[in-house]
Length: 466
Ligand code: PHE
Image: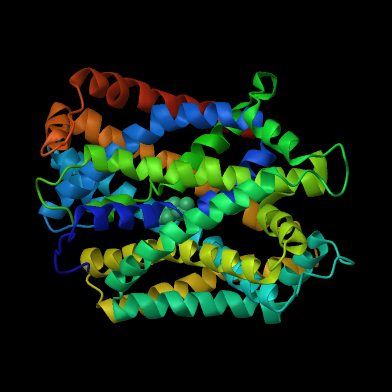
């Protein structure tokens, strides 16, 4: 879809494709573990602040960058940032900013996939484990099952490579449309299953320890804890907003580049955010954290990157038909991750193809091999170190999946709000079902959003160094 400038067929198709892009493992795997590792109620305060102050304005900026760049036949971040910056500054300055954005976005997308594809593999593997009853034996803790899974190459590596091959195949065949048609069925089913699991999770009490009810787990994330606030949790929360909304790397821009010149961006951006946030805080948060709390206790919720995989099998063990239900749930997560990963894979292919002139099928191969290379350290870490700490994965996720995405957001907002300036607001509002008032743009895009990002980066970097 990258060289011929297609357009989206229908409004609903566009919104669902965007939702399929945004809703992924970020919502069901990353959000619960980030929230629980960063103090629960202390995480949610900066999380909502970042959603309003940074997430919404940057989402609008990405749709705007995308629709504008698409007009000139470009679908990746570097050229898009260049095109908008050029409107308000010297071409040379615009070129420097555009190149910087493009290069960081390339590296970040590649590195996010070094572990994202791994987790997609875990979901596929866990779907298989569920079906075959691989974690049903209560003699073994679900934590031990997880450790065993990531340390067993015939499981972890096999499902990772299978998932990657599926992605490569889908991208090479250009079955973008098929994926979207599939997303139309898969997304609603995911929401329905999520709601069932959320209800189950809240009614489960705690079979392990009367002090650990799932309601306490709900309280753990919904009870604001101002005392535990820190720059570190604020950075993690803002990073999660970028990750879950798919903003920063230019993936949203890419989808938006297939808009028609007068297609609305304002309401569509807000619709994408709403669908994603429902899946994240209501489903992802309610399903995983209370269950983790009920079975693993207050200490166990901080289990880190494996949290969803350690918590959920406990519920399937106790449910009638748990094997089938568990298998379907992990398969749904697999597809949710797949539709996001497709967006990223396509983006890298588009970057090689459109910006660097590599033929499409060759580009798809290059990305595939690149994914294997960058993914190997993540896959091999638990096998070689014989531990399940996943330190490397966690660090890469923090630096690339939080920090650098935020840096990219700052570059984008500077190019649009400062360099292109008021023309950007006009551009953003063109064809809009609602209009963004200029006070909002002047207050948020020009001042509050860049200031919030800059302050966040400054203090969290300082805390990290000292
Ligand atoms: N938003 C996706 C998720 O929540 C991940 C993603 C991030 C996809 C960045 C594209 C770009 O899983």
